[in-house]
Length: 342
Image (cartoon, rainbow, N blue to C red):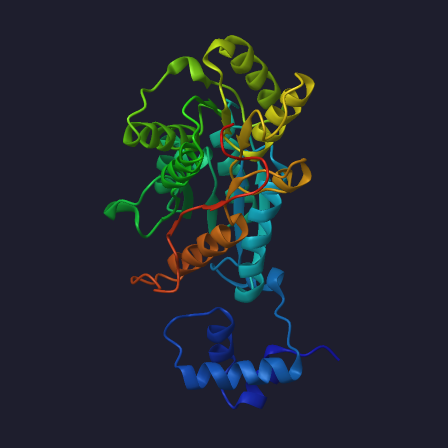
C-alpha cells in the first residue's frame, strides 16, 4: 500500500499539518520536530505527491529555469544544479528555452508562469540582464533569482548570483603577459551578453597594469560559437601578421576551440607559435589538442546556489543564509595550449 502523509504523522507523533510544514520546508519548524518528521519520512520511504500539493492550495511546488544559450554544456550544467536542489526541497522543475530576440518573449514567459503555476524563476544571461523582463516579473509579483556577470551591489544581494568574469579575464590575460606575450588578440562573444563586456574589461585592465596600450585592431567582435572562433582567428592572424600576434584569448571555450582549429589550418603550431586560452572550462577545453588553458566556471554549483536563494525567497525568509554563495570567480586552469613566447 502507498504510504500517506497520515502514516508519517502517526509514526512521528505529530499532526498532518506539521508534516506538511516540514515537507514544505517552512522556516518556523523547530529542529527537534523537523528531525522527528524526517526520520518518519525516511523510515516509511514517503514520497510526496507534487501534483497533488500544487493543486491542494495556493502554494506552488514548481520553479522554472529560463535560458537563452546555444551551449548545450552550459544548459545541462545549469539544469543539473537547479534539479539537485529541487530534489532536496521537494519541488519540480520546468525548463524553458526562449530567445531574447523574439518580440513575444515576455508574453511567452508570462504565459509559462501562469500555465505552470510557478513559485519562482531562475533567470540566466542574457535574459537575466534585461530590465523589461525584471519589470514584468516585479509587476506580476513573481519570485526570481538572476545569474549575472559582474560584481555585487548592495541593492541586489538578495536576488542575484554574480559571476566575476572581469577578475577571471584579468587573471587569464595576466597569465599570458607573464609568459611574455604582449600582442594578445581577444575573440569576443555575443555583445548582448554582459559577460562579453566584463571579460573584455578584465583583459583591458590587465594590459593597462602592464603598461601595454590597448589596440582595438586586436579585438574581434563575434559570437559564443566554434565557427565564430574560426572566423575571428583567421581574421586577426591575417590582418595583424606584421604585429606578430603571439596569443589569442577566446571569450569562451567554444571560441577558443574554433581558434585552435583555424590556427591548425593556417599551419601555426600551438603553443610553440601561438598560445590560445578559453573561458568556462567546458568539455570543449578538454576535447582539443592540446587541451585549453581556461577559467573554470562551476555552472552546476552556481545554479545550485541560485536555486537555494530562490527557495529562501519563496518561503519569505528575510535573512540571507550564510551558506549561500552569491559571488563566484572562475579560477585559472593552466593546460598545454599556453606557453612562453618563443
